[in-house]
Structure formats: structure tokens, C-alpha cells
Length: 283
Image (cartoon, rainbow, N blue to C red; front, side, top):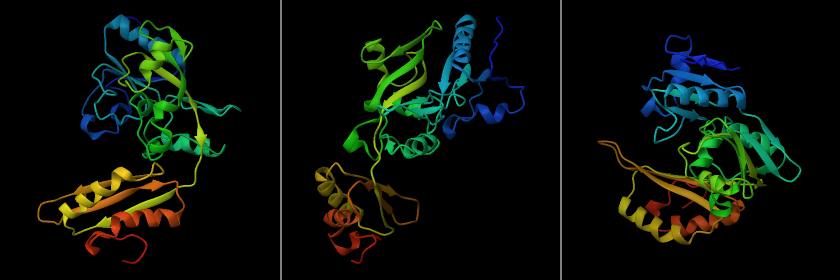
């Protein structure tokens, strides 16, 4: 068996810290026990690990944040932990280069310093790479599209260990496939280049109902939501537990100012008074 020499750390089931690093955030896959977890510090580490996996016949999966609902960042083979590749830079032309191991809290904070942002998710520990490669739905998506729509290029380590840069001009088929296909099946993305957008001022929206006529609420929502402007993104969530009334939550954000946002929401809440919830103005 060939040696695996990397600048980062290699964890086996007998290594101290193995149990902590092997677990993804998604609880559904926290019992999976990989043969190796490689915490990369460089693209060279990624190349070495990809070639090692090919030589040994072990399955390899990249992990950015570890939130994948489909479990694509977990395996009993080799987990390629990209958390060490988390650098973020901004060019004068509004293009930001972001390491595949960066999490959304880091991304938003770094871009905020330049007055820029991305239409991405809400979870602070979600990895930017997995989110982008899977599409990327966020609160600004109705105005700016999916996260992958802002992708301008990427660096990718292919299955043979070669490193390529792709965009609309270079390796255009690979670039097309990366924008939403997800799963890591085309290679290991080590960095992403984004065409950022101006950071807007947003207004948080939240309303709660603890005891409501669910059929009336859902009917009101279905009547109101399809025609809501792109500047507002809200979700209606219904939760039910045995023996307890249904709880409903309206949550989201808008780039509209507070006054027009309140007026817009009255189109939903000014139904029968029992639908009005705990919005910050009187019934």
C-alpha cells in the first residue's frame, strides 16, 4: 500500500480526535466511520489524497461543512476534510476567491468588509462549496438567483490528480456541470470565484401562531405568496406534536424598507384576526 504524505493531518480510527473530526454536522450520518480522515492544508494535499484513493481503491468524498442531506460528505472510505482551505480574498473587480473549506459566517463577514455579499444560505456553519455545487438557495435568491448563478470560476482536482481552472472559457463543460449538479462527482473543488453583489440592507420578518385554523392560514398563504415581489423571501412552516396545537411560523427577510414591508405583509395578515400572529404592529 502506498504511503500518504501530506502537510495536513491524517486521522485513523485509532487516532486521538478521530471521533470528533469524522462526524459531519448532519446527525443522520454521524455513525459512519471512515477508514481515514485527511485534514488538508493545501491543494497539494488534495492531489496526494486523490491519488492515494485511486491507488488503494478506496472511495473518497470531500467535506466542506458536513451538512449534506444526501450524505455525500460521509463514507466508510476516505473523508477529505477541506476546512483548512478557507481563505477569502476580494479583487478590485468585485470577484471574490473563496476556499472550499470556508463556512458561510466567514464568507459573509469577509465580504461585508467590502460592502459585498452573495445570495447564499442562512446557516453560519454551512460550507460554501457544498452549497454552491448543490445550487444554493438563500434569502436573496429571488433577486439574485442561486448561489451557483454567481459562480465565475473554480479550481478543481480531477480524478487523475490533475488540477484545472474552469470558467466560461476554460473547461466550459466542467464549469457548467459544477453549477448545481453537486455530489462531488466531477472532481474535488478546492476554491471558487464568485461575482459578488452589493450588500443590501435587509429587514427581518418573523410571525408566529400557536393556535390557528391551519386550513385558513394555508389558504391565505397560497393566495398571497405567489404574487409577492422578488424583494421578499419568506417561508411558512407548520409544526405539530402529539397533544399540542399546531405551531405556525412565518420567517424570512426583505430588502424593502420596514414600512413597505409591513404594508405588504398586511396582505397576508389582514385576514380573519386569528391569522394575524405576533407581528410587530397591532391587529
